[in-house]
Each structure stands twice: as structure tokens, then as C-alpha cells.
Length: 87
Image (cartoon, rainbow, N blue to C red; front, top):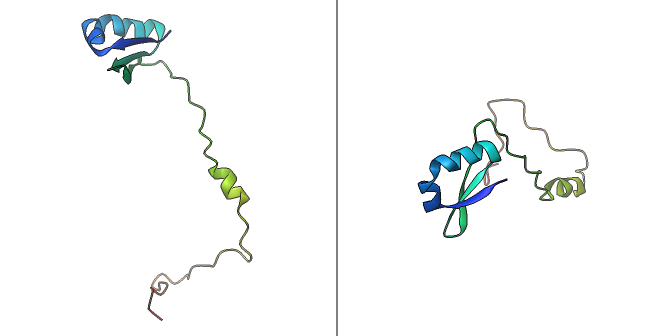
């Protein structure tokens, strides 16, 4: 079980904090009531967070297709497309 430690308490009981991280799992340290760090034993895997679905894939899939595909770039490596104002 993960525990929550205040900074001063974590400093005063650092050895215990380490032992509990090894035996019980990640330990959270707070400053002014807000989490600032988590102590995790080496070799312990943190549970992977599920991928965040921000809707980007659905946005791409909902876009209409371009008729005829995208324009091809010139194959000549010495040429470049004209810049704004150039002919």
C-alpha cells in the first residue's frame, strides 16, 4: 500500500521510507499538502497508465479524403518549389 509522507517526516525517517518503498510499493512525499515526488524501489514496475484518448485518431479518421491524392514533390534534388512572390 502506498503511503503519503510530509517532507519533514520523509527527511526524519528516510531509511523507513526506503524500506517501505521496497516492501509496500511507491511512497508519495508532499509539500504543503501537494504531492511533489514519489519514491519507488528499483526493479518495481509502476502500473502503466492507460493511453490518454484525446480524440486525435478519431479526428483524422473523420476527415474527408483528398481527391486524386497529394501532389508529388519534384524528383530533381536541385530544384525547389517557388517561394511566395517567385514565379
